Image (cartoon, rainbow, N blue to C red; front, side, top):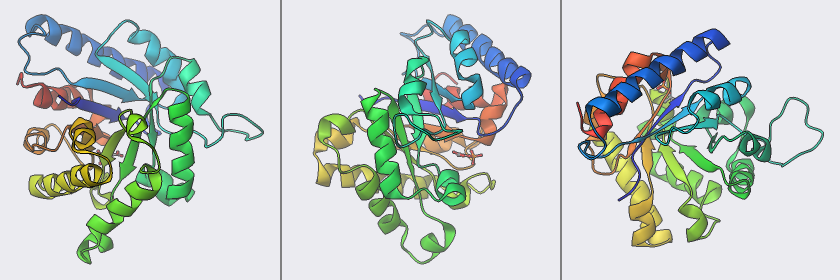
Length: 265
Ligand code: PEP
């Protein structure tokens, strides 16, 4: 069975006191939940992955040390492993502090920092070399959807960004479908729109690699997913969880989203 994942992308939000309070509150809720619903009774426990800003990585990692249900990752990495790149952070650095995941190709990186699929492919290579799980984001902009180009856009992003790798490498990747028009806008993709794109992505993997590779791939939905709409989105057969922005900044909301996926609500 493929992994169910709920990931929180904190972006450039929260001072350190706020970040610690958020992670601490979430930890209390998760620990309590595990006590109330023993692992064997939960339908399936999703993996929780937190993506704090770089500077908080080690401190948030410390909070979840020995917690097998919670992983911590970075929101980005450089496409080289070291060098004269003032202000940048490499995949081996992220891995060396104990983080396990890295977001690559978030639409904000694509649009604000001009990251294209070729550069993102280099970043994915760096992540895999450092044994980090790349959470590779793809998704169309509104005019692309309105012009019926959304399937082609996502196909091209995956072909260029990911499909250069072999099947063994692909098994280490997580894909997040994030329609750009839904990110931070309060406009969510309907469950039907999410399902049809996730099914498209899975079919693409099946056609390019194998049925097994397609079945194993966790495909997360992202874009204004919140405590109210998560259950409906996650009920889709090809939606394996979510990459959550705004709603991951409130412990109660994020916890509710996690519960929407683990079958215990
Ligand atoms: C994101 O930035 O990955 C995201 C999904 O943001 P939001 O949930 O705020 O739309």
